[in-house]
Image (tube, rainbow, N blue to C red; front, top):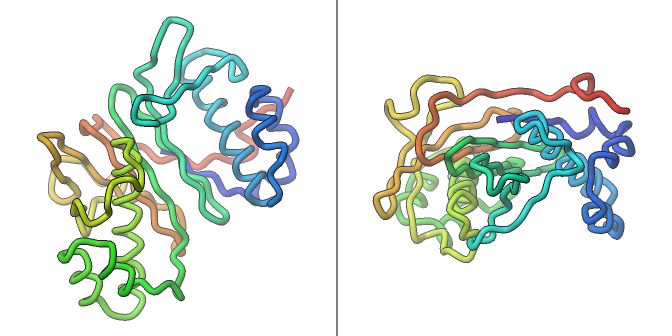
Length: 235
């Protein structure tokens, strides 16, 4: 798992374009919102740089495709790769998850104190989830809503259905262990669908953000890295 604070890299955004494919450059050329454009350029370049480190293939030569479920996947010269990845953006942060031989999903959201959490939970979450949010008080109500929201989004991204699947069609854990807290099968943070077991992890980003990662099967270990500008060498 990786986290990247966007403002730390904005002075070097231009340099990251060297890692993008011609298709990437065309895709980003017409973006009208500078901050979102910078985040997506940085995020796409970071995926390529890290994938290059993991596979030994030059970042610019990496090829990606969409699976039958619409998930982005990596294609190596030797064939499809078992290396899976997922990314998420929110305000000042990018989060990334990589897994070898397992499915991964990831979501990141800024905790908006003005968001009508209880109302949205009643409309779109399961009764159990909505009741837990209703019972919470103060800041905990907002926090729990966004914790559940990112777990749902991460799960949908892991299975590849996105928001085509109703949010009230499945119930996620109302708590999950933080990354690095121990073996994922010990205690909370697991759900099962169609005999597939999914493991949830809290992804520590920033006090004002909620983030969750989901994997299947359980990984041997989960590690969190913070990417600094000094970690990248520009030609």
